[in-house]
Image (tube, rainbow, N blue to C red):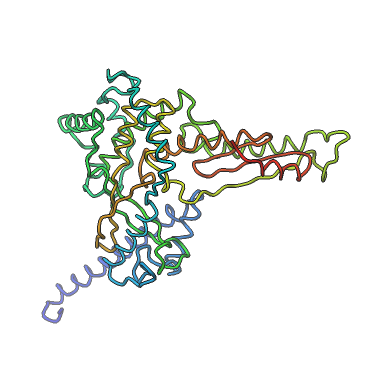
Length: 407
């Protein structure tokens, strides 16, 4: 190509090529140094660094399913659409509602009785039932997380943050309209699920993938506004027990760990009882039992949750909105750009929902009360992770305490 050029032009072309190669090499070196100094130099995220290094070495497979998976009845799904349908059927089956007439009849009867009593606002729409203000909406827009994938409506968080005064007024009017009559737009109850392969799991099994639900950011904004009022009522009335530290402002798992360690150390340092047989060198022995609830969020019955919230004397207007928000939720699964058929999710708290953590803490509050009723038992709870600790001078006594029925 350079044979037809004059010597001076050829030399300039060679110099420009060398300069471009040097600039590319310099940019590549600078990018790698930034990557090492930021992504790989994170002491607080060792797991993330480990995954990055394993992916660089080819030890971690791609997160999206790129091969055949075992679908319904053990049949292999090869095409992306067949894989997506296999995923959505599995996820919908987990959130399938199981009706029990013997249990449902008293629940319906009590619900009718509580609803007939009306709302605590006496239909005046004041205090917790009042329309949302522009200040409330703007406060929740500011805490929305950026750079998040949009839901089926393709609205991103950045769109909401850059709305003008007129658009914000229209959005607030829409949210207040849903709040007033508890009518939730269908787009707010739709989700697109992306299956992500878990580390070290078999890529041919549907259960080896973690479902990530992408929902509407407009719905999340409305959830945050409702959730702020719900959390304020729950904290003011002490509806959530102190042992539950999950998803609560100013509380963390370190609080439960500190209480656990302090309880054990106090028991070990306590004087040994006179005239009573003890085991070992310490005054007290402790037994810790950890509970793992399978599908804790996915199996919650919506009607029973509604009854639980009304028993806690939450405003009927708020409970009706939450109940309608949970009802008739539908989702599709996307695999390599192919969408599955739409399936209903009739039970459970939706993944990715802002309200779900607070609703679960209210739902599980009775569990803490029942476990606390067992003498000599301390309860530790973070969301659905639950543990009980019992102590005495003999392990046999601890075992009998743990075997006592709660409630």
